[in-house]
Image 1 (cartoon, rainbow, N blue to C red):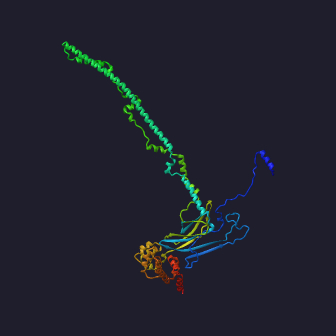
Image 2: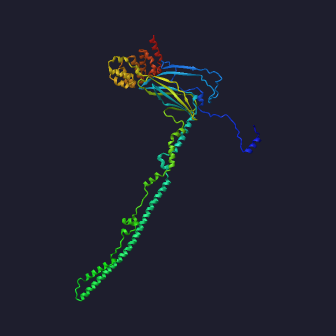
Image 3: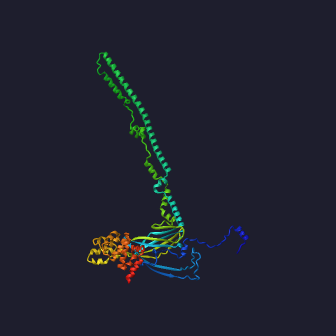
Amino acid sequence: MKLSIKQLLKLVAITGILPVIVYSCQTQRPVIMTEHLFMQYKRVNITYPNDRINEMGGAILNEQVTYSSQMEETLESHKIEDTTRLDTNRVYNLSGVTVASKIRFTSVREGHVNIDFIIHVPKELISHDYRIQLMPELMYRDTTVMLEHVVVLGKNFIEKQKQDYQDYDAYLATIVPEEDYDKAFLDKQGIAGDMRRRQDLYWGLYTKERNRVIDYWKWYDKTQTRYNFFNSRRDMKYRNLYHNYQREGDYAAIVKMTQKLDTVGTSKVYYEKFKKRVKRDPYFKINREIVAKSVPKKYRDLFFSNTRQTEVQNYAVTELDSINIAKHRYFFDDIVMNEMKDSLRDQVFQKEVPYSYPENVKYSITLNEPQDFTYLYIQEYPVEPDMKALRVHLKGRIDAIDNSGYTLPQTDTLSYLISSLEELADSTLLQQNAVDATYREGFESLVNRDYLGAIKTLGDYNDYNMALSLACQGYNQQAYTLLKRQPQTALTLYLNAIVGSRLNLKMEAVTNLEKACELDTSLIYRCMLDEEIKKLIADFDLQERLNEIEFKNMN
């Protein structure tokens, strides 16, 4: 039922309820920055440097298989008009897939090989808002080694990353380190109040004790004055009485003397009378003095200590007092909150910095504009005994500033067959020393790439295999000197070419190489396995000369 405007207003006036007008619209889904990566078929890949059919002896073995799928127009397939949006109701077809399987030789030098490859990142995968992490993995046998990463950054991603770290640093700045607690959380006003209370306590105790001492000595002086007055009156009466009896005795003696009587003993008689008189009167027995029993209890300790006003002891506020007070005078609520913030460092970092600066980075670049990116990756890797081959592939991930991501498909795997100079070991010398266990041990050390062990064992033989051991370990001058004393066989000349190249004796190396190949044309096929020889061929344009030697031998 439809209501007119007038009816609607009347309904509002009666019910007081405003009808809700319900409408619908299509909810706009937010754009995800990595969405278009799901809509395209470009991929990161790795190839050998100068990857092409090798014209100089086949150092790269290449097998390539191509699968194609022709796109057909059907009711389920549609032309892609907006590659930045993913429509889950559509079916997208890829025009083709190419799978390449390749093998390359790499030479051992001083116990290491160089693994080199070129990383290719198409511009379609690069954006100002992206970070691309490329993670090579090296494999041999059942072992996988993560190599250093290559990182390609967009300028917006860099700015966002910097801002994230600034936000996190701002959070860290609010955390007070424990050594600064006294500055930030010490309740100085509370400490001052506690100190004042303690000072007031000590002052009160001192003044109270001092007043008690003063009162004691007032009582003491007053009491002693009274006692002194009594005792002096007693002494005065005693002396007056004594002298009265003495005068009477003197007078009686004079009377006797006038009467011609004996006066001996008269003074003693009167003295005895005096003593009887004193003994008879208790007044003369009283001697008033202050004793402990007569002192009030509140002053009795002062009576025994005889403490004077100037000797009253006091308490004083010390550094230990301030330390003890400070222990319990912090803003502990703030400390608890600070410690909580400190304990949440990792969680806050994960929240504030979703994309941290990566570790284990070999190379990082910020591209100002999206463009195809290539990088020559070179990694030196130590060779272990019995290590015959290495494989490398590349994994990767793209992260965007809106926290969306895209895991790159793993690249093709490149294989590296390890070639080393010990392959040039002369087994005929072993046959010549077949009964020599020491030589056999040294030869086995050489072919097992224990070059130092081979040098130690073969040191007394000074033959070609000893020179090869020295060259494998990088002792080029010693190897060169020893080779000069060896017969000029194909192996001796070839090794001399390698060592001479290392010692920058280029022309001599070229001559020795040509002679070696003339004596044994199979060495022509090895040339691409040894870096020094490859460089000699390239620098002196020797490929045509080697081809002539090979052709001449075939005829």
